[in-house]
Length: 107
Image 1: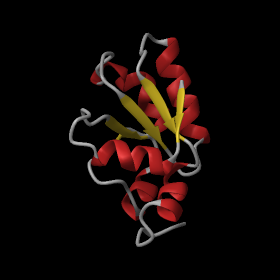
Image 2: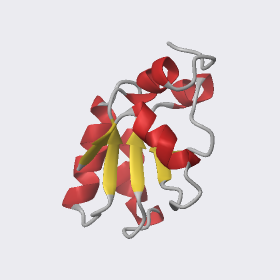
Image 3: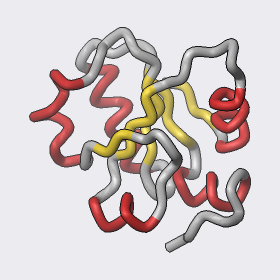
């Protein structure tokens, strides 16, 4: 799986020539309600196996969590299940708040 830094993801999202990836936020509800990247889709980590059919195997998917560990596990799970275009946001939403959006609440 590819590791993306927060600035790399921000550049991707800002590039109109690149198709927008599915931003798969795997954090718990209270975390997602605290802060999120605009346009993210939340599927809580422990529900991914039951909801995997909701995801398009051919889509570019960027997995997101708080610091990047849970999302890396989800990305690896997706790859083991046939997804080939999966990335992990290195440093998670915390890195996004520090490096891209300083107004985002942190926890």
